Image (cartoon, rainbow, N blue to C red; front, side, top):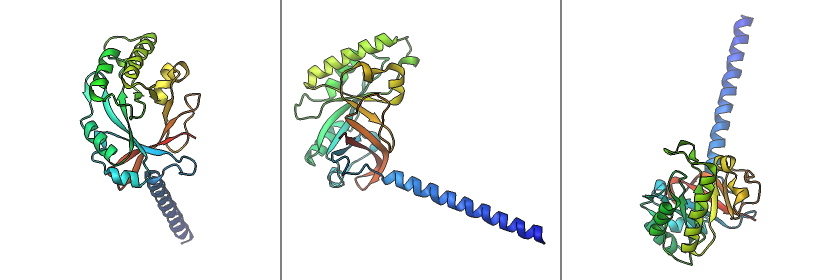
Length: 232
């Protein structure tokens, strides 16, 4: 009898522990999906948006605190975001500052990528500085690309789009790209880093933009938004 009673209590404790763990996990996930850095610490906040995010209610985005939007515009040598022109017009109509993002491909020639970006993004001095998303590495390119060639081609790309926009580019560098090429230390450009919830430090110097949460659920979009803040 004592053994049965002991087993029942053990099962109850295990069940209660599992329930508490599930509740904690659910609370943590809900918190992450709604967390944004405090405005008191980071007064200038915004979003990054592309066609993958679906339709955005730009007035609602502004109402919840987005003062600017970086819009996915082009990628590699040929890809273009089909929602860029619409997002650009609608974000401007909602009185948000806007900038364009190009996803860089180290396997493709710099000139072709720059031409792709310049075809999509208008020459407009009112736009924010362009951003280049540096995440892909050259390890799996069909033709071998040396580290020196990656750096050289990247400089060619930056020079061409900066001539087009009239503004220095922001380097949106991922942790894996920085570990592979150390571009944050080599190139004198403002940085845009990414890390969930905690301020990123993998670039070895201060950042200008921080993607603090890529899962923010808001009334501005059916899909989670990528939430970005400006550094202090």
